[in-house]
Image 1 (cartoon, rainbow, N blue to C red):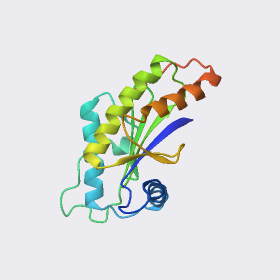
Image 2: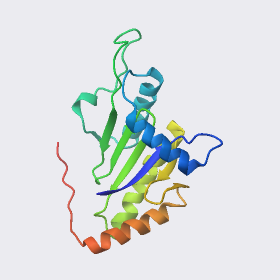
Image 3: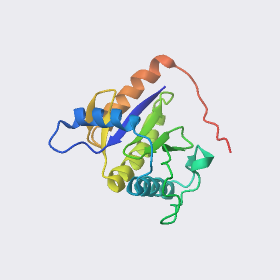
Length: 174
């Protein structure tokens, strides 16, 4: 279980939260032929995240090659469905063709929550700046203003973690 923050580009002129929900549903259904612009953006986002934190690990080895195909090569290639990155703190960052997300596990307590939210804010800043995304919180069903609304996320994580009362140690697997 985790607290999910989705990143989308809401449709201009529509309610941002409703637009975000619709885009997330639509993005989950789209697979097929790779669109070069989508693939380039996805790879650019992953590279920017890895530049900010070189210890981020790509989950699927098939996606570890972040190079783009040469022009005219593999014209019928299908898109990588998504690329997942894992941080040493337990965060999962997923970058899709049209969306991205950051998942925060519920095991953080006290000062750990502050540290992981600081790390999360760094990733959200990159995704917003480089991908022109806005942050949508599906738990609250509303758009978030980062960093101002991270206090709400902190409060939610603290409320969820408190009754769990578990001790978790993150182990890095290489």
